[in-house]
Image (cartoon, rainbow, N blue to C red):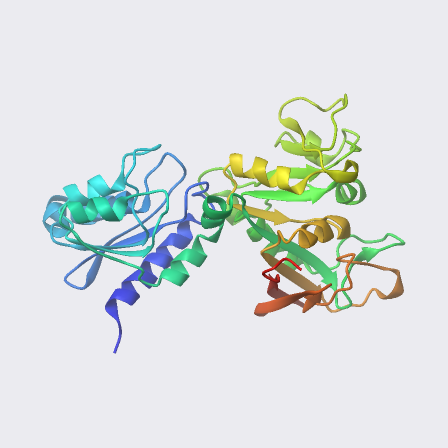
Length: 373
């Protein structure tokens, strides 16, 4: 027998997908309004300062039913993937609208540690049930929860490599290892990330753009390109790189400031000194937290990958594996002894495997020991 409550929450999660590329730094939320077991309105969180999912769903009911909308909303139920906001921010509190429209019960996926929506709705006499498909709803907003609870973004490391783990050759050569299909998929990953981080070695070797080049995604509301960050401890970039000249802006983290020709908007240089004249990754995390960065994608070389892994900052590694071997002249994706199931002493838990054109895509989760050893 179907659990209708779960079905409706799954519908809300499906609607929340529409917020994936546009909601940040707000969480991605979906809502469905139900009357007499039928969904009468759906909504999702739009760009910051625009409607949240609950308001969007209420407006959807008014759009569909016009003069009958108030009657439809009265004594209805709303299913929302995250606890409604109770505080005035860029927009009014959603709890107020839910109460005013006469909605009688609310089913919530995961609680929002920043809000007191459940308490407010209960005080107003609504029946409130939270924790419906909580794991799915929490995972959906893993970036938001990472920033709120860990004070840093959820970090995904993307690695495009050969079957033997090579990301390039010491002798140089073609920078593309994986197929066009894989590269297209990476643009979707970029669009879903608040920011991308790379290292100066990658910039000097490949001169990447780190933008989203996808016609469908480019039509979405809001800014589709992720913010771009470069670790460049000694400020070795010359000033003619795409990241410095395309007008989209880049933030550079360095160990110590010096005069460079490109130190003017939209380029920003941030001093984040660490040990051995390197950049402090903790200071980078602190900066990203202040910037309200929920999700960070790393597209870098072996050194940066290794630094983040050694600091236990990587939450997910996505491998795009081409059906080729680079052999003895390969540059490995990590300076640790590595495979697709282990990096140094860190096991990689396989979460998902799929085929993209001729390539394989593996989504893995590093399993760090709890005591840090």
